[in-house]
Length: 79
Image (tube, rainbow, N blue to C red; front, top):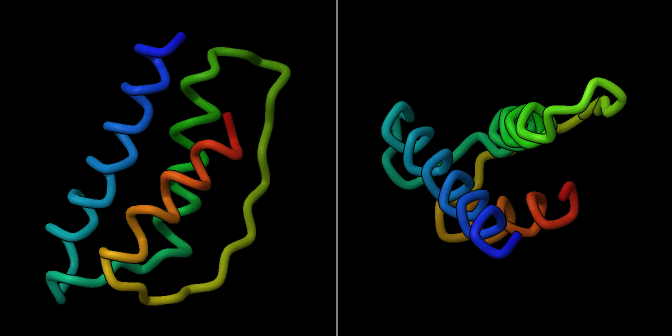
């Protein structure tokens, strides 16, 4: 369980880096889209048909310094 949790944290940080790489500005992330994609990835990783999630997130630009820890918090809340 601890290894799976660590792997989820690594995937969360990897998603931030992926979005930063695709971003026009190298130090911001559109957090609403990031949060929706993160939630979809986490729910898919549950491998259960009886779990569904609906996200409603505003389009907000955040610095990567803020987005990364918020992504980790969101991942912890969803797991």
